[in-house]
Length: 269
Image 1 (cartoon, rainbow, N blue to C red):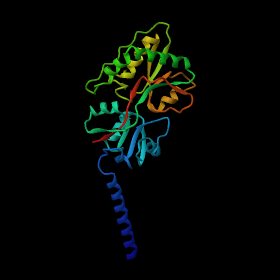
Image 2: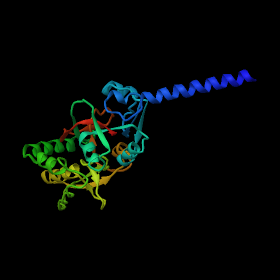
Image 3: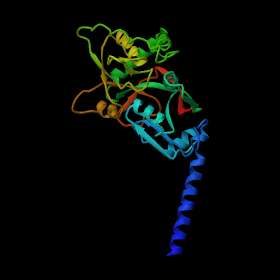
Image 4: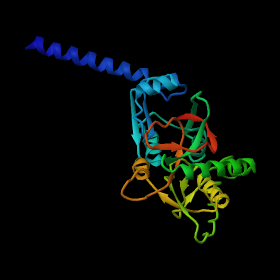
């Protein structure tokens, strides 16, 4: 009986010792990409399952787990309450979030800049061509640069640009249903009064003018954006903001990039 008790004690001792060693390996807050090995990484839901191996391939570190969240608020909350050790997002969004909480910090991803685009059904070829032409016109007139300065550059939670003025309805014109989720501030967010706001909303307002079409915003949760866009039973939306990266889903296409984003990792200090 005594031998059995001694055996159990030894097993428990080494189990605790091994666990403690494992914890020491990832103790403290991460400061570099390599510090993110064996950490829990959070990201917004994606059309493609992103696992530890995909993270390792693109970013060079191997997380112990990747957790997906439905909203940016949930993801940021998980980071602050230590349910995840880091979150993948854009540098511009990270700076915006740090303006609200200086206990957060950025680890650069060293990835090349990525184009921010809209998603459409591949059957809407005419609308895709019109949007691309509109984006090109706004770029040529430097309106995209003006929107960036107003809605992205130096914008903080205490210095938000006002929601864009709604374009008067054009009688008899086609209406574009633009889906937005408000999960990429300051590119897009839902204001305190419930209005779609930020760079993307302002961009769509300008596109409404140059295309001569009405725009109606539809708020769609992140996890429902693709099913809503591809819904065969009803027309829920015609396009969705936003997407960066590689889209490999059948039946969907991307517009030309209307701005560039830099991906990074947001962590606690």
